[in-house]
Image 1 (cartoon, rainbow, N blue to C red):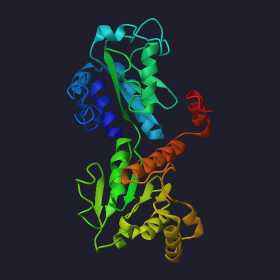
Image 2 (image 1 turned 135 degrees about the horizontal axis):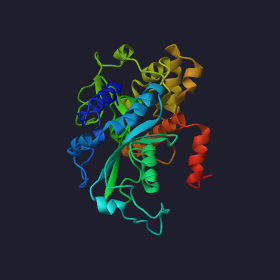
Image 3 (image 1 turned 180 degrees about the vertical axis):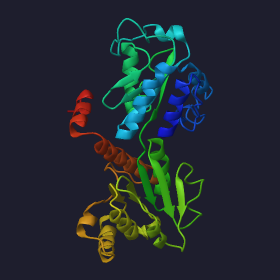
Image 4 (image 1 turned 60 degrees about the horizontal axis):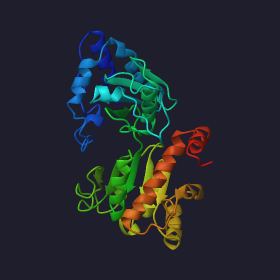
Length: 330
């Protein structure tokens, strides 16, 4: 989410104009995101914009502050497709009861919510609405289809974690698709355009190195917030990938391979100027341990580990303990 977008919306609302909202800025309303959802279409974004008033300005102002502060926060959208049904109480015997009324009203709403469960909106929500508004923090909306008559969408106010896939192997192709699906910003790097193809990596940023090898990797740079998966084809350029990732201080570095191969990579990495401390930062083998063997199975193991690393990076030990307790996993 761009700060300038929110500033433009506020300026329009102060001037009494309906702001122009685009699916580029609010991708949760794109045709791709809504595929298969019979209750919402991209056109709903225009209808929602026309309902915004000056009373919604504090919501967007709070969103700007969240961006400035680097807060884990979202803009959420209450989508109503049956106003009467939305306001009926349809709690069942399994779910927790949220009062004797359903949604607070049959009107759509834009709201702010952060990981601390702070909610800012132009109208007072009902207890049931609050339950679903808080769930945008599990993104995009954990229980968005739980009750009839309405659904929920959201867009994060923070940047996605970038994952670098060094090597366009079959495993990397599977990782790219799954990582993008769970909200990572994926970049794949290889020297062979036949492997770094749109067909193999449709959802990733693709970089083709010059020179028939990984020497060109030195011209690229990752940040200390990025994750790096070393998955070069045939492991041919794993040493270069490990050296590059550790030299740039990537938050996470993982490499595929067996113990024997990794011992040889260790020697080559140190010969290239890395330290033992650098080497120990490389998770090897990459991925969670549960018997994965095929490229698709390995991708599940790898992306599951990336999700866990992101979870531990974003949330305090206290917050994680609270979450685990709520799930009964103490």
